[in-house]
Amino acid sequence: MVDKRQMLCLVLGIIAAVSGFFVDNTDGELTDGRKLERGFYGEGERKKEIWVSGLSEKETRIEIELGDRNFDAAAAERSFEAAAGRLGEMLPGENLSLKEVRKNLLMPVWLEEYGISVSWESENPQVIGTDGTVFGEDCPEEGEEIIVKAEMMAGEYTRELSWSIMVFPPDYTEDEKRRQEFRQLLCRMDEEQQTSEQFVLPDEYEGRKLSYRVRRGREYLIFPVLGAAAAVLIPFRDRQKEKERKRERERRMMLDYPQIVSKLAVFYGAGLPVRRAWEKIVRDYEEKGAKCEAYAEMARTYHMMERGTPELQAYAEFGNRCHCRAYRKLAGILEQNVRNGSGELRKALETELESAFEEQKAAARKMGEEASTKLLVPLFLMLLIVMIIVTVPAFLSFGVG
Image (cartoon, rainbow, N blue to C red; front, side, top):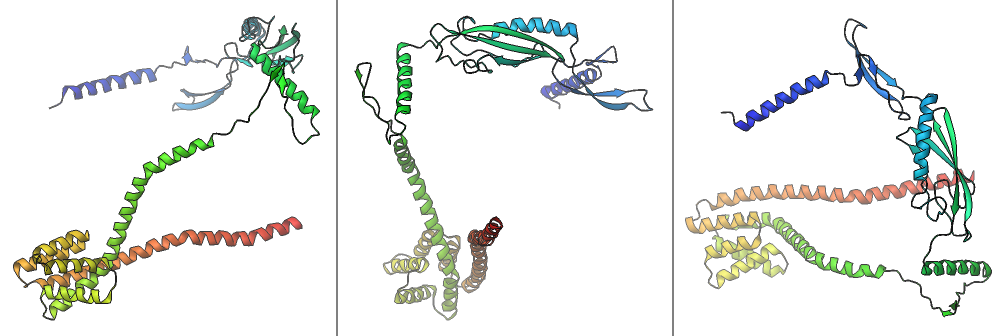
């Protein structure tokens, strides 16, 4: 049964498709069937795609590059008139008027709404830059008059405007004035002391005793952050180390597993019960004095049985302590033997021995692949060193020649 929401989605999809069909078939950019709208002044060329019927038997697709609209004399004059007023409004920027300029001016180079580009020229670029920056620090208190010109361009038509601008020193606060004057004093003293090894700062200014210090960097603040980060990461590092230790222990135990199963199978096949075979393996291990995790767990299990732990429980705990699937399987085989008797134990041990050797071969193959991968880095480094040894003398000989 069709859900109402499904029906609604289908209806809306059909409506959207029909609407798209009619919208696509209305030539929105064509007027009177054969007129294309040009771009506004200065927008550049537009690529248009039109389909022409009657040019050949089939409707033909044509791509054209349609240039933007160009100015005629009347249109340029109208744009100049409007743009001149707009420039006069924009030029003061944050200043109240051009009769008192203490902050930067606003000099746009493109008036998009009129399609007009503007280039600027300053009578004194050291006071007013062509980007509108005002450098009024050295201007006299009574101000300095600067003439600024703008050339407006609309296609091939141009018009020039000019403004008279009075530039005054920045309106500093008392503290800012004092800092500015003191900075100028230091600049003069620096010029006077050019031949000395050290620059001697003044000990007083305007009757005030001065003292100095160089602000130290705050790089030391990174150390508490690093300490906190290390404190947070230490537990993660410890857990990672513990995981690596467990993996390494499991790897070593798995290397001993085929040998242990083989010994159990041989001793059991020679007529020894499982417990006596287990004891024989442990005694041999303890006499050699070697350190092997798997044999150490077997010795712990044997001593538990000596202290009275039931054989079934001892094997189960052995499998759990080893934390390896293979040893749990071996413990399960031995537990089943204790419960059901020794009828199938020899066959089970032989099957497990074959499986253990296959797993050992797979593990050895994997270790070899990992080792070869690790060797790639030093090999690439050696290759890089050889290339440097060969190429550097060659380049040096070219330079000498």
